[in-house]
Image (cartoon, rainbow, N blue to C red; front, side, top):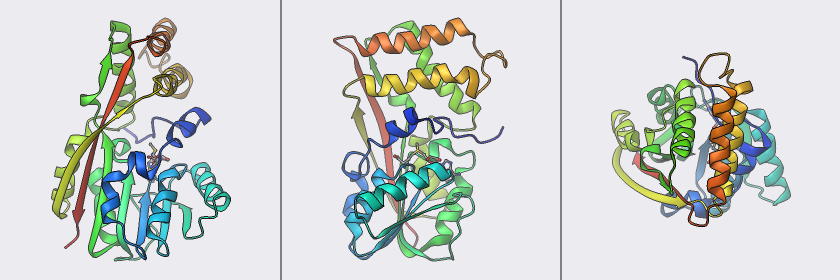
Length: 264
Ligand SMILES: C[S@@+](CC[C@H](N)C(=O)[O-])C[C@H]1O[C@@H](n2cnc3c(N)ncnc32)[C@H](O)[C@@H]1O
């Protein structure tokens, strides 16, 4: 299997990520942020959380890395537009960070570990670039805790299919519950775990993202050629998501798992 980032970089996916902020998605890490820190954000995407981090540690410096150039460009442009002068962004892979040992006071990574084939290898790299005494904070969803109502068999199929796509791409939709163990096994100590729910409001924000990604899987993943599904099933799943988004009682909540740990 080869690691592939399932959401991709369509405007649909990027806009979906760009709705996030430090307050909505990074609150668990805020108590550990201090002015003057040197902070790394791994897999920063379009950088909306990263800019919040940069503001919180000013006059410290925030470095955001992502392996995708288009995301780095969007993040850097947003920093410029918003006048955030203490953030810089560069293209890099979490498995081979272009930084010296013991470079950062803190490292944050949001919604990346569920896409990694080798999370332990990534944590080894975070350990290397983190200063002794430094803190790491990770947050990832766990699809085992998603709440979906009212459910139908087509809707269940759509969620199952998306999860399955992520697994085919070497990701782990259930990594959230494993983050604590991954940190401990990588040598981090004083670990604190927490979890929270995000309710999609309006529902269409999440359903449209999922529907478009499922439809795109014919082309992006070669899903029909590979015999994973057929055109009729793809249409039925995206239709179920869109119908659900219009349901007056539609409810969707995503479970997120969070951990912090120290390199001592
Ligand atoms: C789901 S997005 C999260 C973006 C942002 N952290 C947020 O939560 O809004 C995950 C990001 O991780 C990046 N990514 C995936 N694999 C990576 C890797 N091996 N090294 C660095 N970045 C990676 C992707 O390009 C993508 O932009």
